[in-house]
Length: 451
Ligand code: GLU
Ligand code: MG
Image (cartoon, rainbow, N blue to C red; front, side, top):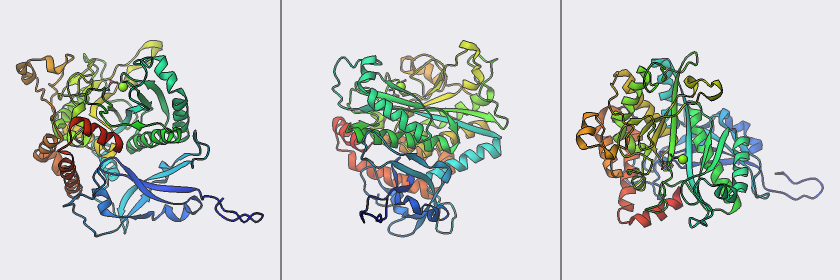
């Protein structure tokens, strides 16, 4: 296709493959080359610039980032992660073809501020220090098309489903082609709000898969000329878009270790330590999982998101939820049992947020932390004394507060690579400054266009 044909001498567009990195603010970036030259890029990748990792959501390189104008890096493709979607609803649109990469120094050493490397190192710590494997899946909610959808598109309704059936059908097909193993496409509670879920997978691949879901979903919408946004809030009083991260742990033989049928809620002792760790560090973790000013319009009571650090079994207001298991048809609960982390949204990097949740859980296991912060009631309806008795603390009310919590949580902060934290704080400080005069409605519009 790329070369003149003998008979006509005409050329056509060359097929391209892109090597990508998904950065600290969850934006996927990269460089493309002719697909027929892929072999020459496999081993040493393509060039990259350190300060690219310091871009704010407003697309400015953050002042005071540690890199400035200096330095060169490589994006080294992880060939197992290639995503190819040959075609979509627009017959003239080029297919998707991209490969996730790790960011390395030019001599191949890992680069300290690469979020994918951070996650892989953490997954390896689970394997080497704890003898555990990590399985995870991200669920994504988003808004599609015009927000003033007709009244017939009622919450969870067949009408709303049918309205988006063509989109949904293409989406499921494209996700399958891209190796994402989609499960369900469903209308959600909000107007013009939908959700896409996919099967769990192991370790770093789970975060790569979250990126694939976002990019493929956006591409199908783009090809169909539909507005789309994963931003946590599109209207101040609207229904929020969450990302829910489901995690389970297995031993080296593949046996689930978070489950114990002899406890009241099925959570094993190890699972309790893990959950206690996540809850202990949660106010600081929010700096990564709810990382933009708009995230805090979502983390409020009665959004079914999360506003207190607690675990619940049948409680969608809890930050960590023990997911239901079913025994219908003789299914075994052990293999289904997982914890759902809810204070997460699509303005977060899947790799950075998953890595830091795993770190907090590992610290909980290593410190054998006791789990007190549990409730199946809505935490804001408990009295302050009841919450204190169970160690249930409120989550930060703003990005500024979350960053303060992070700065003061030495154990977590010090466990993260210094250049990565310097870059992250530079980005977030600048982002706060550039958005602080926006009203909630303006914030909604602003982030809807970015995410
Ligand atoms: N939309 C809710 C959120 O912002 C989640 C609703 C649900 O449980 O599916 O997280
Ligand atoms: Mg949902």
